[in-house]
Amino acid sequence: MILQLVNEGAVSLDSTISSYLPHYRADTGRQVTIHHLLCHQSGIPNLTADPEYPQFSRQPFSAEEIIKGRCSGNLEFTPGAEFRYSNSNYVILGGIIEAVTGTPYEAVLRTRIFDPLHMDASGYDRDDLIIPHRARGYEPAPEG
Image (cartoon, rainbow, N blue to C red; front, side, top):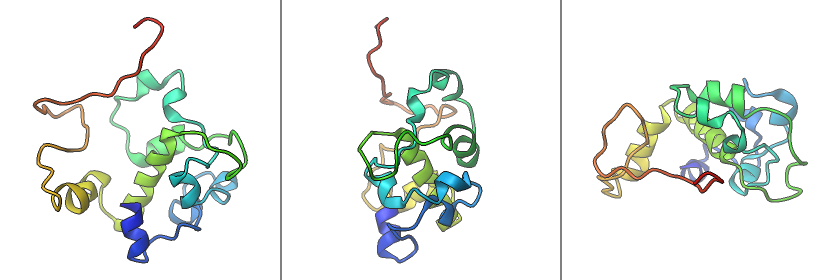
């Protein structure tokens, strides 16, 4: 969706987070570009690596609340200096999509991706919906 917005001229890969999310932490938001986010070269710590992630991950926070509270800490490295996967990048990109389109991420996903491609069995993962045959992400841990 970000690249669709780039093609439409609504987003620039060279623009910074602060260009689209003025509420983002200014000192880092002016350093990290959309390109850095897409290439996992942002330096923003991975949200899912936070030890508190299991406790807050299923809470009904808005994108802005998650970005402010969990995705705007200190950088782990200078943007562009290295590659390190970060789910935080996707949360921030979702917030940018909402800011640019003025529409909730879930609705943009439906109208720009799922509906045009007839992906009728796909959707935005929400705990308040019963979705038949839902697939859930997981990763191995020492306890199983």
